[in-house]
Length: 198
Image (cartoon, rainbow, N blue to C red; front, side, top):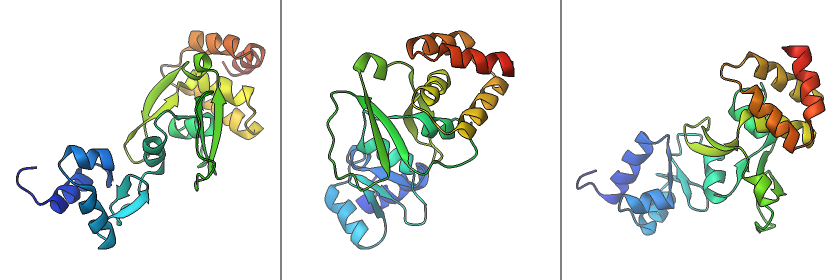
């Protein structure tokens, strides 16, 4: 980024990175927190949440902002289905899964439902996917997600739509689906859906 002023570095970064910058990213390109605060006061950027700024013209990427704020969080259930394009509606709240030992502030100020799980189960099937804003976020594999929506009940229409979507996917992994179904005690339900749909 050459010899640009700090504010110009921020604007260039926003242009090249989906209209969003975090405090860590700013620090990595040599921009101080004072510059971010000044730009925010001048309405050149907008603070989306602590440590995350966006171009005011852009809508911002809430999935990426929450991932930045809750780095151990994994998008879960209906959120994962949405990120995979398996359901046709935007979830009304964010759902993230965390290790059982994770502690968090009770004052979240975001529509976030937090789930906690034993560490060995929490880690199973974690992968990365691009958010609607083009940023990488944590989620679970499609196969694990299908088991999660049966284990912690999503609404019947969401389950039906997700199962139909899965059987039409290229690259589906039925062996992995059955392995997760066994682990999460939903094998009979998965077998019923797959026997009808395949």
